[in-house]
Image (tube, rainbow, N blue to C red; front, side, top):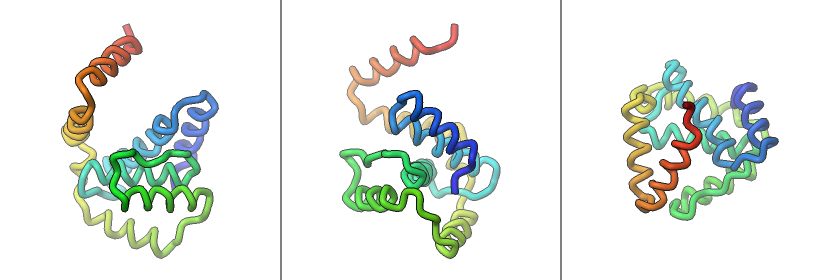
Length: 142
C-alpha cells in the first residue's frame, strides 16, 4: 500500500489538472525512496519504476501503458487498473516483499537513475529532446 503522503500528493496533482504520468511520478519517487532507505531492493532501475507505476494504477491513477510496451506489460497494466481501490492480497504482498528484500539497493543510486533517464531519452527524437530541454530551462529557478 502506498503511504498516505504519496496518495495526497498524487490527489493534489490531479486537482491541479496535471497529467497522469506526473501523478504516477509520486509513486515512483516513493519506491525509489524505499530502496534507498533499505526497505527492499530492486533488480534494476526499470523494475523500481515499474513497481511505482503499478502502485499508481492500483491507487486509482488513470495511467495507460505506453504504446511501445509489450503485450504482457499491457495486460498487466489492465489488471492493475481493474484492481484499483481493492485491498491487496496479504500472502502475495508478503511474498513479493520477501523476494525484493533479497535484491540489491544500487538500482536507486544517482548513477543508475541517470543512466536510465539517458537511455529513455535516447529513444526520443532530437527535436523532442531539444523541446524538453528548453521547457526544463524555462521552469528552472533563477
